Image (cartoon, rainbow, N blue to C red; front, side, top):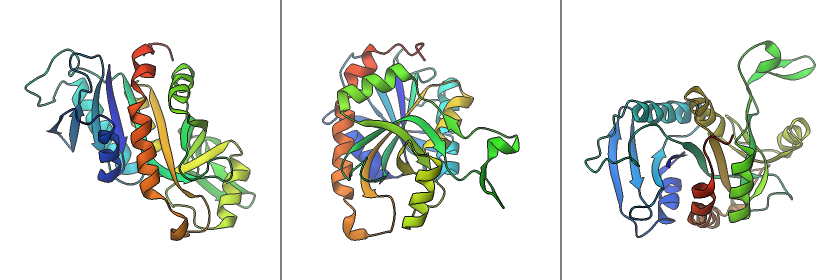
Length: 253
């Protein structure tokens, strides 16, 4: 199984890679991006390509689409190419740290999306916010495979719920309350998941989003941030993923 893992920044990518140490990584370039390949077990079924896609849904969508397109066209520059390291991806994972809605997603916990929803794509009206779907365009939600969400939650201990994608990180109690009012099932917010999911959907590849909570959603209080703890939780989660992925059938959506 080939898995593309898209993070926003290098420190998140490195936290994912740390889960597979001391397995070697191989960096290679594709048009528009650089990937780090990890094969956790010699001869094993799993291959992870790690991508630092950039901050925000647009950058995430563009870089993820570049990687998916290169895979579909077999443009990887890997001299060790075999059946596990060539051809289209079986799964895309949007991963990293994010804000957690309190008290359901405390700092240091893991959140696994059962829906990936863009929270601010739409229009402001006299009656409030209207999502773009009510204007007759596009999509605002992608749903990961239910069977895979259950399996990954079981092995990682992640809480499951909606992860919101925002273009502007929440910085006030009023904004946090408004998001919870519109999305009562939301557990976390981040900035890339919907972009990654849009690219995956365009290629017909299933998607997950896994977030480690580094801070509460609400007023920006740097003293309450626990980025190191969240990155460690992210490493721990990826270290437990193999059984769930190896037993999952990619055709079981």
